[in-house]
Length: 178
Image (tube, rainbow, N blue to C red; front, side):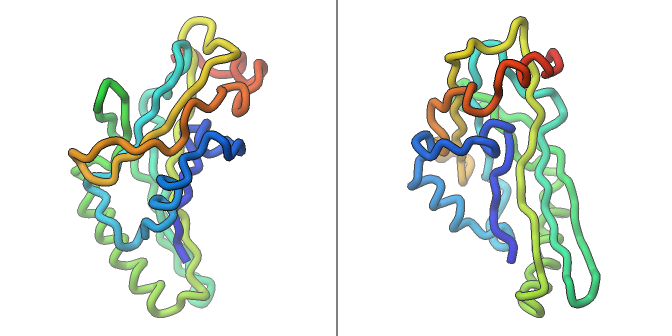
């Protein structure tokens, strides 16, 4: 079975502090079927503190599945394009990749219907952080929002999570400069 896993923007995927997660939005994300959802309007937005950014060109969506019964696999990594909304940088599948993504959704839906117990999938967003200047202040916070359809309001997924819960000082020091 293929379920969404927002495993990235390093901070979203690594954050284990439930107190910062908006459970209503998290439930909406978990109800989203990667095999059925229209990806054209879905975007993740990050509100990063001064001194922290996403390395250009590293935001990507990993999507695919493997069938244990036939040995078939269909995994694709889609680079995500940057979009702006409400002064925030967001990431979405490029419109030019939508036909390929929808074709993959159709193939994987067939696999899921034919062999649900033998089909295991991945749906994850990943990106690599980088620092600007000395990096973020130790008490800095970050947030992640999601938009399910273009034009809709951004919904909070992770709110004001301390960067220190995700990255320690050694992690920040090891990050490349933007």
